[in-house]
Image (cartoon, rainbow, N blue to C red):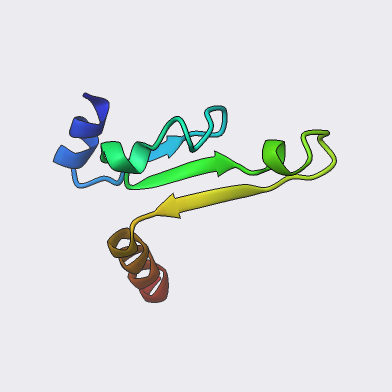
Length: 71
């Protein structure tokens, strides 16, 4: 429902999926534009390493690259 409000205004939808495993929750399949995953818990889990992943579809990545280049 909230994603629909964002899309109606032309905004991208970013989902913080850092707690749930990407195997069990796949927000891109549900229509999210960008998904943030925690890679730390899968690499070390001891708070001595910090890592994250931003996942998106190719068309959104191309759009963001264009925006960054114009800025």
